[in-house]
Length: 262
Length: 272
Ligand code: FES
Image (cartoon, rainbow over all chains, first blue to last red; front, side, top):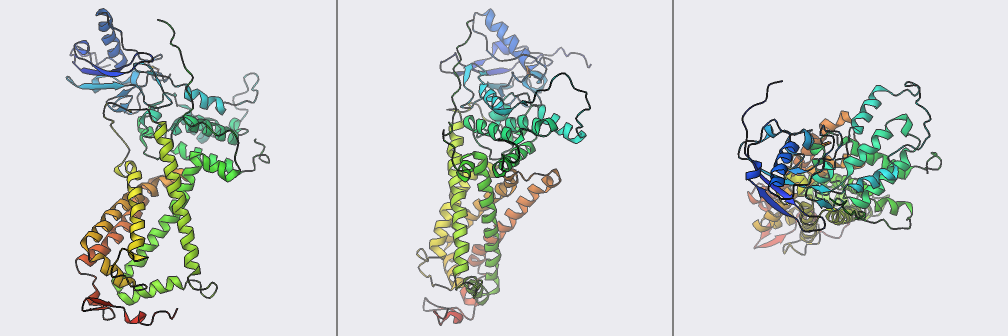
């Protein structure tokens, strides 16, 4: 490790503050965001600001977080116009203050989409994602006790591709990044990590139709800006969206009864 | 702190209860609409390309282009009577155009509804979106309006005071000699180029025709296609304005005392 630096930076923080059910506005914090160590993560910086706010008797900034290691997907926020901030392939909790310079102005906003209502400050309700998963993002076959690892042969390539899709942490950055607020990247990832594997075949087409339909109830449609792929902290490829589209069209053309799928 | 009261997030686009017959059901979904948009887009791309290719005959003189115009009317004669094939193609074109515009309109409304009111306060820092992708709706509207103008100008002739039916060469020259008209064509074709660039690339995605082996050439294909069509189309008004193409160069087509004499070939109209 290259040793912690002793220098600190002062930043100017503009944060969206919104009480539950109330109107929101941007609030600027200058004093509270001074003396920040570049080794802090973005969330640690917010913790420091919050401690100072509490000391002053003010309401701390509400933001969602859990694992702080980039795997739970709860810490999403828009930082300077980019979901999860300026560093590619990184969730907000893994973003460090060394990405910023002394005197930088930092704008922090919650995800904005009609399907993601703001609950408080930077916290949005992402339960529309749950509706998509409920529609078919699972396998219903009873699996019994743990099977022999190699009982079902899975080609290495398929396993790799499925793992790439399964890396999705459902943070919502793709929706937040999309000018149309489409959830195609999320849905495609959640589809493909099942559709690529032998265990996922039995319900492949009904799953695809059900999840796409659920997605369309809440979100916009894809116009291929490609912003979602750039914003994704797991760098999930937009190619998965093409596979989702292909499976959806196939499902529409298939005689699904004869294919053994409703 | 109290647990926050959560309201269930209501669907932004509730689905109609009753399932529709298959093609309607397919067209109801945004993925289906994008598929229709891509398929109609491919048809329109083919048209736009052949249209540009045919127009290059302007450089070969009045005889060539006017013959070409006649040839299009005579396509597949005598299997079909004269102009029937042309009309079949035109009907296909109108349908493709209609569905392309209709799905774009519906998708735009759906997308608008999916957005949060007010959007982001701070400036978005786009990473991948291009001018072409962000202006698709605008360039689309420009092209729609242009097509109507273009038909009025060179098909029906209502917007072209010097219009002579069947004399493609003269009509084009007479139209483009007016700088304002040429400017309309130039602006519209730049819009078309941008529209094609994003469309020709993203249609593969909508169709699900995605193959890692091809992905690297998709951008190149889109840029090449859009570039060729745009450069070809832009060259015509510029060639007329700079005098590279002019009515006087052509022995068959002359202006006599400000009145356009039709080309010799079409002196006897009505023989078709
Ligand atoms: S806090 Fe879990 S991903 Fe950031």
